[in-house]
Image (cartoon, rainbow, N blue to C red; front, top):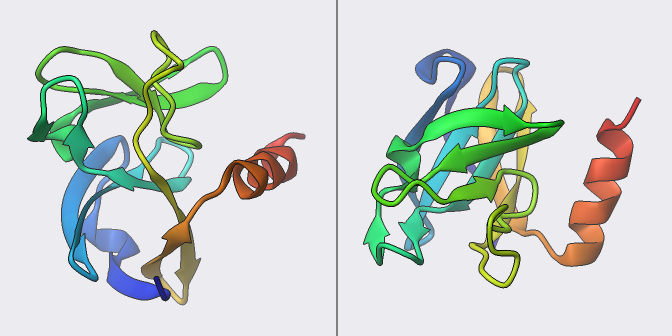
Length: 122
């Protein structure tokens, strides 16, 4: 999956999500209160519905998450792991912002997710 421009920074308010079709995949793109950007598969595995982009964005401790709007399971935005059941996850994708344009990139592997999390730590 290559880097694909999805929207501009001004297109998505903080603490919200939006659905996007990127290279045939239905993704949910999120912007948190501190202007961090995340992308997950849009399909909630518990509800078996494409709804995560409409979920509630929040934090549990220092972990940003989105709560599925149907059954309320929280998925970590950094890695897609369900915070209540770590055996369930959705795919997370790399996101970057260049000149005000938000790009979604390749799926994150566990190793890449760990590297990004370490870079975010103060």
